[in-house]
Structures are given as C-alpha cells and as structure tokens.
Length: 441
Ligand code: 5AD
Ligand code: SF4
Image (cartoon, rainbow, N blue to C red; front, side, top):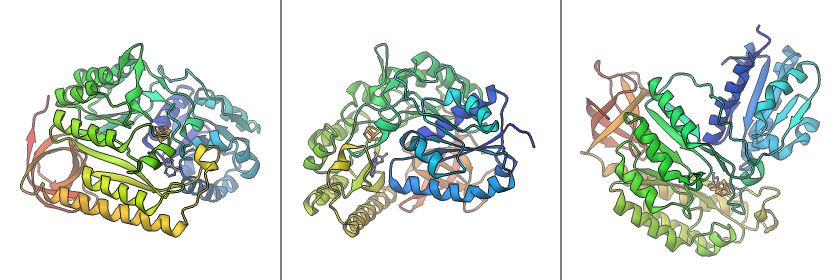
C-alpha cells in the first residue's frame, strides 16, 4: 500500500464538495495519491458539516465505524476537516481518540504538514480563520465529468441568527474574477458542460468593483457551450443587473435558489434576514418579468423560536404564492454560539415535525402540479448519464434544474444536449420521449 494514499468523504453543502477537490489538489501537489477505496488509504479525511445537529451526529457515528480501520491499520491517519473541525476544535481530539488531525476551512494549505506530523505520532489542530485566504492559486483535483463546482467566494457576513456558518467559515472574501474565468475555460477544454459558481451569498461577490453579474457574464461568455449555474443568492443583495445578465445569456440557467426561510416578517426579523416578505415577493415578480420562464427553489426552516401557527401559515402562503420548483426544508436546530441559541427553543419537537411535514407535503403537491403542466411541452436536457432505475434510459437536467429521464438512443451520449417531449411527470422527475440532439453555443 502506498503510504500516501488519501481517501476523502464529504458531507454537507456543495461548498464542502468543492473544498474536498481543493484539498485533494493541495495534497496531490505534495505527492499524495487519491484513492476511492478506504481500505487502501493511509489517510482518511472527513470533510464535515455543522449546520444542523443531525449533520454532526452522522459524523460521530461514522467515526465509531472508523475504529475498525484504525484497528486494522494503526498507521492510518484520521482527519476531520470543514465546519465541525472549526466549531469543535480540540474537543474532537479529546473526545474521539481515533482523530489525529483537525483542520478548519482556512488552513487547508497546511494539511500536508499536519498529516506528516501525524505519521510521526503527533496530533495537530489548525483552525485559524483568515480574512484573505481564497485558495485562488490552487487548482482543485477533479475527475473528468460533465458538471463541476467552482467556489467564487468564501465565508459569510450575514449573520442570520440561526446559522453557524459565519463562525465556522469566517468573513466573506471573493476570489479574483480572472482566475475564476480561467478555471471555467480550462473546464470547457476538458469537455465539462456545466459549472456551478458557489458561495454562501454569491450576490455580494466583489473583486475590486467587479460584481457577481460581471462575473457571471464573463463566465458565460468564456464558455458559450457550457451551462452556468450559481448558488446561493440572498434576497437582500439580488440586483437588477444580475437578473438582466441571466436574461441576456442563453447559457446562464434560468434558475435561482433564493432561500426565504420563513413567510412571517416577525420571524424574518428575529432571524436577521434583513428583508421583508413584501420585498421578497416583489423580487420574485421582477425576476419573472425580466427572465421569462425563470424557476425558483428555496430553503425553509420550520419551528424557529417563538414561531406560532399564524407564522407557520404565512410560510405556507408564501410557498403557494411563489410556487417554488423545489425546496430544501428543515426543522430548526439550535446551534451553540449563534444568536438564536439564546432565544428559547420553545416550539415542541412534535409541532416542529408536524409543521415541517405540512411544508414538505405542500411543496410536493406544488412540484407535482408544475411538472404536470409541462406535459406535452419540449425541454432541452443536458445528458448526465444512465438513469438510476433502468439502463435503457438516460437521465439529465433541464435548464431549470429538473431531472428528466428519456429512452436511450445510439446517437446520444453523455454530455450532449437533447430536446425531448415531456410525456409524463411525477413531483420529482419528468419523463420524455423522442430525444433529438441539439447544438448549443
Ligand atoms: N437549523 C435549521 N436549518 C438551518 N439552516 C441553517 N442553519 C440552520 C439551523 N440552525 C438551513 C437554512 C440555510 C440552509 C443552508 O440550511 O435554511 O439556508
Ligand atoms: Fe448562514 Fe445566512 Fe450566511 Fe446563509 S446567508 S450562510 S444562512 S448566515
């Protein structure tokens, strides 16, 4: 076994997946090799998430399982990266004896050093946050494929009162526009067909006065045959200029992830979301005028402290009004160190669960209705691979991020754009027929 084989598991948001590629880039530069087989690895890294308690519990269970690895290979180095590393720091090493290395999101450059020390028996913790680190010069390690992520900024300055991210990922800072555009170009040369620009709040991107709309347009122009996506947008910072940039570029997807969190102004204020629901709904209306056919997804939290039935009903109302194409829906989870942590978590568990289920049921119904209305229409799909359920079918996504499945055909391959006619739909999937390749650029 190569002493320097590294295996990495990633949990949580897309930023973490992008960070894992960055970490692999850093390690490969220092002579480490990436393996997909944990039993072949001498370095096992978990890139972790702290956003909700259940995300952390999952990692603790995983660590219990990894004891087997340490028994079979006492040389193995086990490292915790990401938000849990930043949040729990030395507690992780003290409480979980199998952990050798704890490295937070702004210290990945020093990870090879920590691993080397751990091989020598010395445990290490690197959790300093930085105001400037963007890893701008690091080329992430990516396997060939269709879709890639690029993180365009790090950290968050919004301080929503429920959220641990500003504490685990530090202050907001943007990468340079030129390096991002160069990365898009090199992905295009490697035949990637889709790139998602990532940040906790991409709308506050700023590289010496060049804003997110400038960045998005520059990426779209640099690779006209690629689809450009982005996430996440904060409703306070979404500018008209950005909406026009989306409208003016065919290859910027007509899809905006715009977390609303709650439909009640009182709760939004307690959350420090800095917008009202009226502002939010106006924004949706404006976006729909400027970008015909634009679709929206959102994040919703059920059971924030003091949430009443009336507040909850307002959330359901907003969902009905906007008709989101999709939603990520969560039960409020108190996070130590956040402002909301000191507000009493006074919504009983069973009420949180009931409200969350009502939100999920409503969203399913809305998604079903939207998808049904597409039957008989044509959609352009980027082919991503064989359908999970049957290898007679291919699967891909529409511009508006919906999964579409359609019959295989000899003239269609992964990475192609095809036009299909929608014949059937569930709340989660469109089914199409008669795929025809289309040229895009
Ligand atoms: N409890 C529940 N959901 C949360 N989110 C962030 N923090 C919490 C929390 N403490 C959700 C928000 C955010 C998404 C990424 O995770 O909806 O938009
Ligand atoms: Fe957390 Fe709010 Fe920042 Fe999103 S915008 S990462 S929810 S603090």
